[in-house]
Image 1 (cartoon, one colour):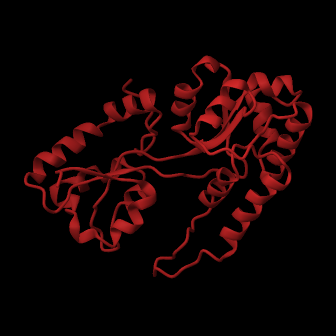
Image 2 (cartoon, one colour):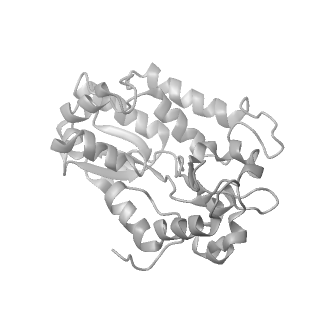
Image 3 (tube, helix red, strand yellow):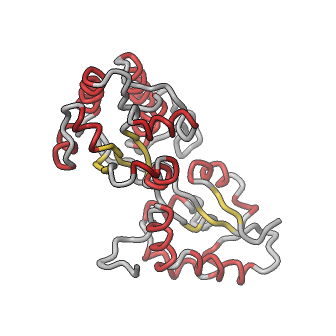
Length: 264
């Protein structure tokens, strides 16, 4: 077993049921750093009785990424302030998607319906189980997300290509998929997959309101042979300067409380 392991944000709830397999990082001094981090993110990595098993790496605030040149070509609002206003709600976003398709046939606002579904679920405070581990995936918040996702398909504004696949990457480059709903790290995905479009992309708030998608943690298995050194490495890897570097280099959005200045 390694001395340090990673846990994806979408998996942290599962590992809370396996908390006994990890060290409580508070016993290694994590509590002294708690005030520097967003309260909700710290809580997400903690058990109900206050043990911290996951030290926050990043969070996933979401946004709408779009190509200004393609929007302008289609006669749609293209400046950041104008696109923000024109896509402030899901219905408004869908209207812009329909207008894009009409102006430029074969061009789509949404890569796949799952994008809409995931973002809509992320805009709520609920998921698929409640604090008592009771299934709530049949409730209104999931039905609403499903309805929004299927509406994108019904309107014909979904390209129906899997995110991260070759078809989606090609569409970014060709301009037939000039928009992407996703978390902060989408910026790196676009930069890596569509390098020739550099400088043409803009970012505006998520339609329908803010959301978070993912954001990972580092943990120390209970079997660690040197937990103090492991925690020392974690705190160095995730100090303010390295988190700023992670943001500028890899679009990993820091989970720390807002700063008035950045070390980089």
